Amino acid sequence: MSTKQFDQFAGDYEQTLDRSLGFAGEDSAYFSDYKARYLARVLRRDFSGKVLDFGCGVGLLSGFMKKHLPAARINGFDVSSESINHVDPVLVRQGLFTSQPESLVRDYDLIVTANVMHHIDPEQRRTTIVELAQRLARGGKLVVFEHNPANPLTRWVVERCPFDKDVVLLPPRETASYFSAAKLNVVRRDYIVFMPHFLSWLRGLEPWLASLPFGAQYALLGEKHG
Image (cartoon, rainbow, N blue to C red; front, side):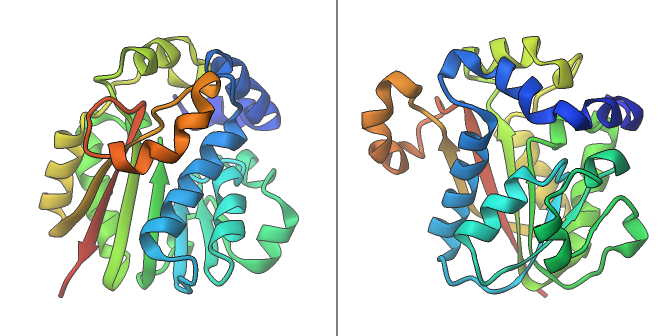
């Protein structure tokens, strides 16, 4: 999808996404909160580094990261300037949210990109991960959340989401190969989002299922050394 098309969706981004996710009985806020809680679990809630939400859209995940990682300094980047205009003013006052790549620095302690890579042309994905790794401080971490193409319900949702028209999903091994090219050590590879709403009483078990390749999404965490 082009920048112009994302600009067109910026005003009703959450509502459009919620309609695509209706089958799961949850909305877009649930999935963003899920990712932020995952980060707080694997990084510890007292994490206080500088964070870049790469492909932040209207700032939904950024808001939940600020909630679950309250000491972190949250910044955001998105190619859609119209999406940036819809970021919560509270977040904007506390950090940099921009569509200008030249404004980004090279000392982030954490870069998070959530369901963004499948929107990037396959020929540019390796370069994107390498460039993100170059923006990490020594010991910094990159976390990529992506749809799991091995999950049939995930593919069904993607096929029906207006944002995801004609996208090519990335299996974890492809994402891991980009980490290797960027000289990032893979620290964690977790499958996430197993239980739909009607099985929500079982969601406490999901961290124990992280090695099973059946989750609707996955998280890959890499760390920069040297």
